[in-house]
Length: 406
Image (cartoon, rainbow, N blue to C red; front, side, top):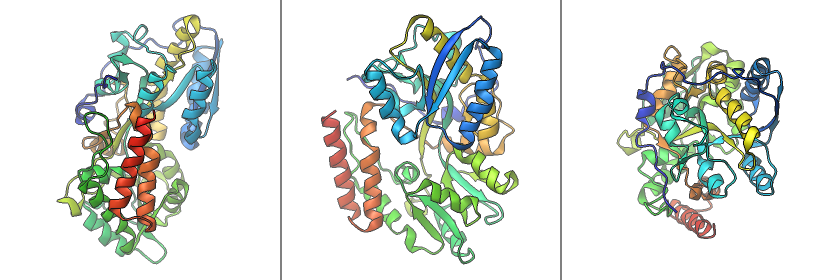
């Protein structure tokens, strides 16, 4: 299998101006009619914006087109789409992350858009976001936003963002009883920036997993010592970690722009601030390098003709200023469309700053085999069930075995 071309530098995202013209043809510019089925895994404030702002705006511009949106639990979404689409069904459109592209394209489940996505259309987006949606030279989606995790902090509890992990420990140790400094979601995705900051890598040039390395062991050793320090907390439960932050029981969490609406709704916008993840004191003050991902829309490979044309019109609407603008304003999304100006948004700019050191999420099919074993690796170390060396080797072996069986 030919390797796709990865983003060459995430700094290109932050450096690209966000003021250029869109180049998109507004929905409603032609007489559209029909029905579209859309599946997504959004919840909370994001789902509210989709259901109460975006789809109604589309309906106003296109009164003869019905859009039926179905929310599927995110951890079930890809499998449900794959199963239904492989048997000739599935929705017309799917919202999902960029790292699904390689797997879904290889399975011929999503449609290549090159015949519809002219250069006039693709020029409307940040170039790196278009590049990340290409697989084997073909374009398989339109980007709505790019994203990475950064450090949220409650300004009532943490006046200034810590510049490095030593300051995190100091701030956390000074918290009042019953309140944590940093509450860390201990899955694989959220702490991965520390792994890459320590120098860990996922794949070699042949797409073979190389997770078992001294750098990964150093990361796991550091993470294993995390909860021994006063005022720090970890749990592999997103709702529990967010609840601590929203209730004022944790001063800091690591999360992405998708959490902004829920956090400001709970605490008030004046109490929520964002900064890049603190430098890693235990690794020569190297920066954390979290996953850089995309939210994007893909088209079911089963549809064609007029239905594909209709679906593509909604894709342009969803990734254009009429939709991406409200998602940026209401939910803190970092728009891939260059026509949307976020220069005056301090929180958005903090995520853009974090993106300068982020690690592009691989979109090769092999990436799909990483998440569960890598998450289990962290769980095993934190539970004391395996040493960092044992857990890293076990994860690497399981990932490579799964890759061989693909």
